[in-house]
Image (cartoon, rainbow, N blue to C red):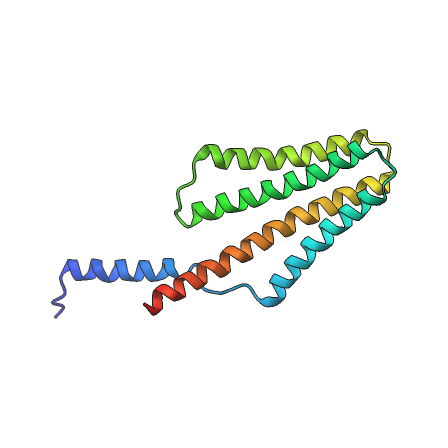
Length: 161
């Protein structure tokens, strides 16, 4: 005979559901992936900046491309943060979320417009585009790794107490 009440069954289900939710992010990124992400970010940014330094263009053009890099990096980190906050049920306003996506797209579009109109060889344009995109992707990966590690460390501390 089963003498269990429906209340105790519901409590068990809630506990099982909460355990499932806690294990969504239960493994830290490997040191190799963290290192690869940081390396990609440094290689992308350094390559882009060395290309600008050696470029045969006016200083205001170099400033434009450098600003686009910084703008793009900040934008993709904001997008990753907003997406991750939503996943972790941390309140994110829709305006912030939308602006983050808009600025990310704007940074890419501004780079494309700048390169389209630049008096550069096609290979130089490709170099800037690829190093820019590598930097953006790597910034997202670095931010994700940082959030994963912090999330897991925070949950381990909660479990210990």
